[in-house]
Length: 328
Image (spheres, rainbow, N blue to C red):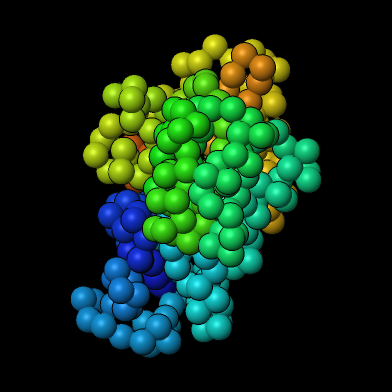
């Protein structure tokens, strides 16, 4: 039996480098040696590709690979750069197409698209370095639309990188200025109190065009810590699936429907996770992750387990979908 050669691509230049290594390791462990030959492809923090521990040009690394599993998170792994390189090499790959992935990574553009589709999100105002107003004037613009507390974060980053909690209006100018200085863009968002819940979406799974996995609740061990990639890296978060929140049947159905709608609205493919804040008034969508983590303590594997699916089953399904067929 001829084994399929799978290149598992991990690493990259984002703050989620270590999490990507963990996702890649989980994917490689999920691939059966009877069916697959695995090539561990590493992109280091400076963007250099490596195969078998040696630097090499992407074309050489991808030569002879049947399909690539993109296990990268954020940065060049999700802004379309890597997807375009793999596409030019003529190799099928998992995950979103370049434009859709880049759209989901850009919080301002993604918010605009989803708001146009009628998806409820916290109110927000975005800024760039071309804005000529002072940070004090920018803060006043935000205050005119909604009051504190606020969340300030860069618009073009993944997994809540650079998130700042801003309890008062007086602190808002410095938070906007610091974020603009560090990232060149900023999003000031109203802080909505509630439980953070994530819903996974898988294309073509179990007979559905887009299959929504059950909600997973994400809780910080330290209540004062925001949910960020640093919190995941340092083990400060706990995932429970099915969610411990007492969702009404209507709220749970709404979460699943909105997750599938967001996935479709952004043109994503393969799989994604959609993050919500759930309040007594219903869910507010926070952001969509086009390439969510698949490591052991990430929400996605827990969601799969809640419906009796395994990571090997999901990985195989995803690879077959990438190559234009399906087994699940």
